[in-house]
Length: 115
Image 1 (cartoon, rainbow, N blue to C red):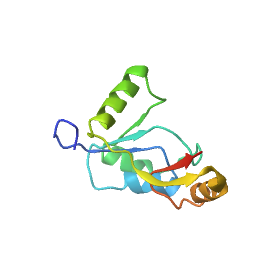
Image 2 (spheres, one colour):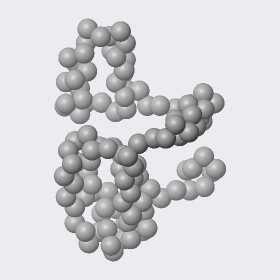
Image 3 (cartoon, rainbow, N blue to C red):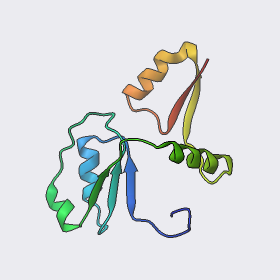
Image 4 (cartoon, rainbow, N blue to C red):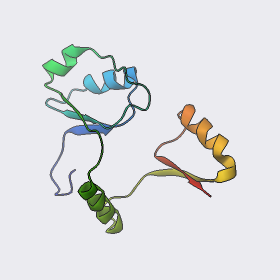
């Protein structure tokens, strides 16, 4: 759902593995939009284009945030309209563990390092 209560058909991700992208395209939903805002798992995303054109999927890239977007985001968080997903908070001395969790993909959300 969007902030206005309207249903949305879309997907947003910054983590694309080849199999992940292919699975998203094979969804039964027609006319979806996939927004990618990064390529932290690599820049090569291979998929079967039949699913893209048959289901009329749009793939949209975003290269970052404008200052106004950041203010809007912070406002939404402060009004509790948007809640960030935090997997865990680790002390600085556990930085190696934080890297291991990320490399092994054993997290969901953000890992916060507390000094």
